[in-house]
Length: 454
Image (cartoon, rainbow, N blue to C red; front, top):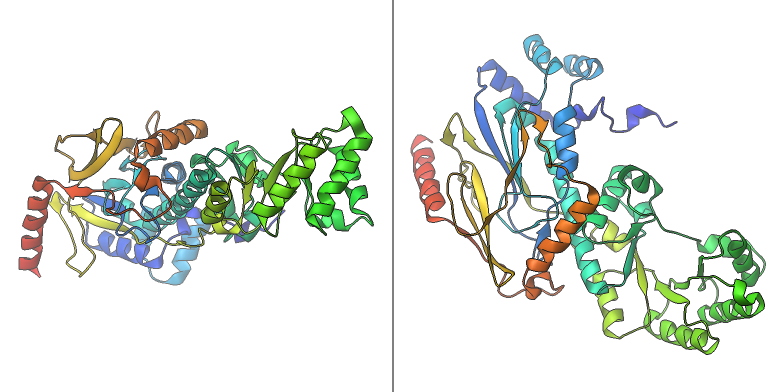
């Protein structure tokens, strides 16, 4: 078994935080500051290559908040640092998150400067969970957003996640498979993710299996002996030679031949798939599909689909697994109220909307036409997106629906967006997001108060 000290576990996850979260919490403790605070998590700017983001990761966050504890070992480690008082460490030793959480449902498209979630809790509770909350929402939202683009490009064809081996760490690979499935990806090659989340798993052979035999045809026959309804990888040596060998094996096997598809993993996928389809059809193997992989992203998939290449599904790895073109988000988790007063910062280019908020999505003729960010006390036109998901540190019923339900939510919500927003190319103009007059006025009021007190 792995050394558990080198992995994030339930026993040590509370320490997955930046040191300044704890030093601030110590200072709050020293000052007797324990009143209610509001922290808002949002993305300041969408990546240039994104028209929307698909919110994901809430289930992970709520599970963490509900179970987060500082173990005796964690307290001993912090005590050895010499930065924290015994009284504060006693407080951490009995820590239990006691706040409320309001969030958009997983699978909801979101836009810049609109809250994805807001935490309302005693200030220390809300402060020390910042790092973990940001980490998980950022990762899973980035990956779900990328995967949604790949699924869109595939235009109904199968998409399978092949990316675990090149992702940035074990946690990323596991959470990615879930995020991808939320976004519409059909299956993953990651067996552990399948075990944890119930995501369908898929995979057959790699080039190493073919290479291990003296003859390619022998490798195919050996694998078929174990898995008759397999997908055969035919480009280890020569793609067209590989498909011809499949035809020869099929002729010899007759009605016992049950191979479902062949896979292309390199070269001119469009041209090769066309030629392979011709060879298979001429041999009466019209039921044998063609699956493609090898350095694909949404743009490559879109080109293949636009060319009407006879490819039935795609395996997508690195480009989706690390969201290669937009791997990071300008995500923020900011204090926006404390002790009943709106709070903000005046830093250039980093605006904060004070107080608790709500996002209202307006629709017309079955299409989303714009969002309005207002105060949580407002009732504005449109559907309110932020919903209560945790109260007093306990998840509410329905806050974490099953993965299939989240996947259905994502499909439904994406279908409501205008086609130019779900398109892979940049939308002009972007999806409209406005601030309500009441929230704008409150923002100016808080700004004036903060400015006068600096």
